View 1 (cartoon, rainbow, N blue to C red):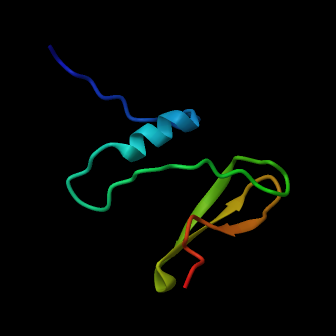
View 2 (cartoon, helix red, strand yellow):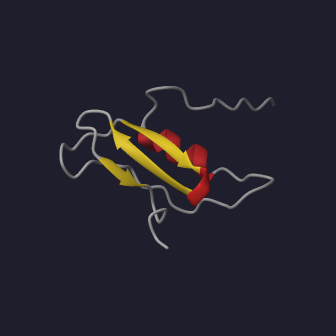
Length: 77
C-alpha cells in the first residue's frame, strides 16, 4: 500500500492547518494545540504574520482592519 500525504494549500480549512502543524517533526518543538486567530475588532480571520528576529516574537496583522496583535505568547517578556 502506498501512502500519499497531501500538504495543506492556500484557503485550506483551519482544521487542515491544525492537523498539519501537529504532525510529528524530526527537529523543533512539538505542537500540542493550535488556535485559530480571530480579530476582536472585525471578526476577520485573514492575517499576515511577521517574524521579529530581534525580539524572537511573531505578530500578525489582520487584513480586513489592519489591527496588529502578537501571536500566542510572543508578546510576553
